[in-house]
Image (spheres, rainbow, N blue to C red):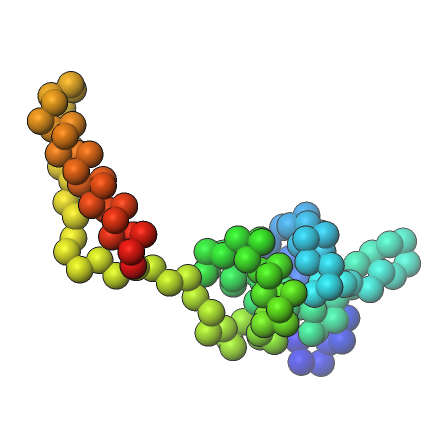
Length: 131
């Protein structure tokens, strides 16, 4: 990608392993970050800087688990890294001090087991909301 200034949508699709329709969707979702140049017949061509942004967007969405709204917020705040390799943003997952083990049972309707499940789910919720 160093010597190429414009890259076709098909080439970008292959490089990122993302369907072309996804790239067109991202154009609509992130219009300030993803603006291809159109050539003859309306064909899309991306600059190398735009391809780098697309790589970053893909990494945020697919690898880091961010939502489209989250990526939009980063773009709006000007916090979108230039390259995917510059990503320091991650989805923080709460650290669980004690593992919660839930055993599957085949008995349906046992009130003791239902109470135990409710207790475990309540504890899990408290851990996740307080982390």
